[in-house]
Image (cartoon, rainbow, N blue to C red; front, side, top):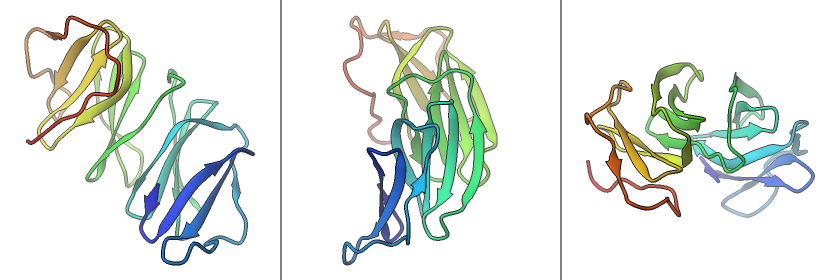
Length: 168
C-alpha cells in the first residue's frame, strides 16, 4: 500500500517492510515482525498502515516512525477481511456487523448490525456505508450506523466481489 512517501508491504515471513516510493530503497533499517501473522489485506491512510493479525487484532503502524499507533481487538473476522478507508474513518465487516472506526485512535464511531453474515469489505462514501451479505442482500447505513432503508435490497444472487459506491 502507499503510505505517504512509502510503499509498505507484507512479506511471506510475516513481517512488514517499507521502501521509499521515490527510489525503491529500504525506508526501514529492518522489517517489523508480525508474530501472529497477517489476516486479510493491508490498508493505509496518510502515513499510517493498518493490518489484521490471525489473533483478530487490527493494528495501526506509523510508516514514518515504525511505531504502533493503536491496536483494536475483534471477536470475528473472515479470512478475506479488508479494511476500507474513507477520509478519517475506517470501516470493517466483522461477522454480521459493520464497524466504523477513527483512523486516529482506533475508537469505534459506530456499529451497525446487518443481522446476517457479511461478505467481503464494506463500501462507503461520505453519506453512507453498505455491506453485502453472503446471501446477496445489501444493507445500507448512514454515517452514524443507522439503517437508511426499511427493507434490505435483494440482489437476487450471491456476491462475487466487494461492493463499490459511485458518487455521493
